[in-house]
Image (tube, rainbow over all chains, first blue to last red; front, side, top):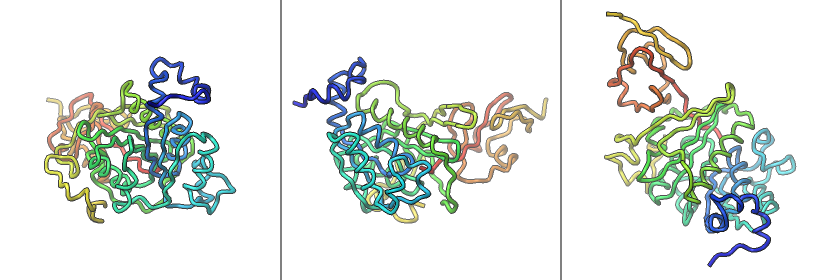
Length: 261
Length: 70
C-alpha cells in the first residue's frame, strides 16, 4: 500500500488540505506516470508543475538540444544549458525541484518508431510538441493504447487546449485533419505557452484525480491580446481517418509519411 | 424578402448575402486556407459539413487558425 512520508506531507501540505485532493488524491498523483512529449515552451512549464505536484513518475522526451533562441519561453533551460540535450537540462532542474519524482529522460525524436515505448504504462500524455506531425504520432499512440492525450498549442498571442479521451471524445485528427506543413518559425511570446501548459497541467492533475470538469468535447481558445478564453463545442468526426467510422487501424502501426502530412 | 443579413465574423459585424451556407461564406471572405477551422455559434463545424450548414441573421462565425507551436 502506498503511503505518504512525513516529508511528503509537508511538501504537499497546501494541496493536501484541499478536500478535492487530500491524502488519497496525493497517492493517486504519486502512482501516476505522465509522458511529457517535448521539453520546449509547453513542456518546460508542464514538467515543472507535474514534478512539483508530486506525480510519482515522469517520462520526458525530446530529441533536440538547447539553443539560445529557445530561452525566451523554454523556462526549464538557461544560458549555461545552450548546446546541452534538452532532456538532460530538464532532468537537472526537475531533480532539483523534486528529488522524489522518478524521472526517466528519453533523448530521442518522437516518431512512429519511438512512440510506443515512450507511452508504455503511462497514465496520460501531455503535449509539449511544436508541430502537427508529431502531435499526430502522439494522437495515434493515445488511441492505440487507450491513454488520454492533453493537446496544447500556441501561436503568437493565442493558444489552444483540449483533452482527448480515446473512445469517449473526438481526437486531435477529428479537429486538425489537414496540415499544409510549416515552413516559417512561429512567433511566440513566453507567457502564452506558460498559460497553455498551466491549463494542460491542471487538466492532467484533475484527470488523474478523477475530479472536476475536463476540456473534453471542447476546444479552449485563449487570446492573450484581448485576454479572452472561449470554449468551442465539438463532437467526434465520423469521417476522422483515425477514430472515425472507417478508420484504418493500419495507420496506427506504422504511420506513413503521407498519412502524417 | 431581404437578400442580405448581418452576422458577426471574427468579432466584426458583416453584411453578407442572406441564408448563405458556410461554403459560400468561406468563398465570400476568401478564407481559402485549408487548415482553418470554423466555429458557428460556438460549435465546431467539420469541413464535410460546410456545404450543409446555413448561416442565419445574427449568427456568429469564427475562422480560426490551428495553433501548433509549442
